[in-house]
Image (tube, rainbow, N blue to C red):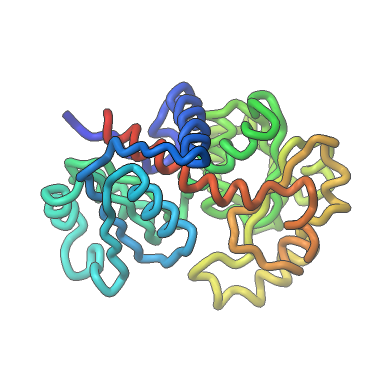
Length: 301
């Protein structure tokens, strides 16, 4: 039987995603209550990092330990996907030794090729195109505070990056409207916008994007690997900042999210993370619980 993979939000049905978030909320409560729950005892997660990350490593490693399993951290020094050994061969070999593989890398084709040849589930923990694990945590954070996001309006402010692409997939899977405010030349993937044109609107106006919105989300102006472009991006994104004043244009019940790390004074004002509408810290903590639910799901199907 072919394993289930999680490379984008489209790999699970809307119903499966809803169940996954319900389960993540349940696991979070169990964790708070100190309930020991170890369904993945003796299971091993391989974590391949070609891009470094604090939250991704800690959330997967801690989550796997809490589920009774263990994890192996493979840094860029430990493995060179597609450089020392073909991706296809790496996938075949690792699948003989571990039960699930998590990959955080650059090209999305890397995780696609790895999954194609892997006999165990493969999880995309971030590529240049998508960041689906973060979206489960975000959707969980919204549901915990405001209930279902179905039929609501979400505003994305800033770069049309991997997070923005994943929000387009989320609009489809969770049934909400998405308004994207970005500078010209920094739009999300055109094919995703075209496929979801009944749900996605692109504007240059922050005010237009945020008016009456139920959730406002942003990310850094220069992502990992774009440091050389940082100066040009600072100029292009000047004015694309989320602040309490901008949030005042949104729905009175609106929430604010950021996948972190944040650059205060750039994409957000210095006081935005501490605004009462911000659920950034819960959102970050949800990475662990959402991924625990995902690991449970993938290893039981």
